[in-house]
Amino acid sequence: MFKVINWVVVSRSQLLTDLLETRWPQEFLVKLAKVAPENVETTMNEGSYSLVVIDLSTVDVQRAYQLQKLIEKRYSARVVFLHYPEKIDAKFLISPITAAVFYRNTTLEQIGKSLVSVLRGQTVVPEALLCNTDQELLDGTDNLTIREREVLQALLTGCTNIDIANQLFVSESTIKTHLYRVFKKIGVSSRGQAIAWAQTHLHAVQQ
Image (cartoon, rainbow, N blue to C red; front, top):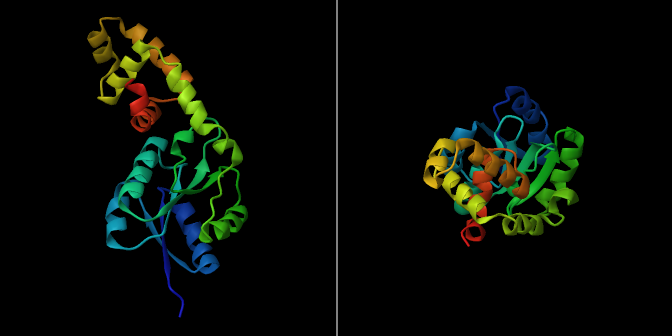
């Protein structure tokens, strides 16, 4: 008698989840739980899941980061990212529990072949996402000025640009300039990504 393997698919796309439902249960002998991002914790608490597949075409990268941190902290599951964005730097999503990463143009056939390796305990992450990732993040931290670190710290507390400007006694346009430079140095493209990056590397930012 086969032991049923349980996976979670996190997506807001009914088309994608329906498509996966027609393939993966038969291909990998798994049972899929299809949930929206806000229901992941409830679903994980209700069963034993070995893999969580996150669809980055419908789940914001900041939300995906938070979900992966939750899974890493509370559950013994690995994470797979589908539709990984190539035009933005989301390397902060790569963590020890990341089992696989697939770009938008990866076919379901290619994903299926790679998931066989994942089931064997292997990791399938494009080499470009692994090369010098840690060093690049450290370099970005080292290059931040004291004022840029202060701005990043304020961002972590939920401050708006105007709030930060008032705290540091500068204009809002100056804060926008600082943020632009910070984003460029640490390789992110949004406030959410910057916050996620700082949460991971807070010890470096607080020097």
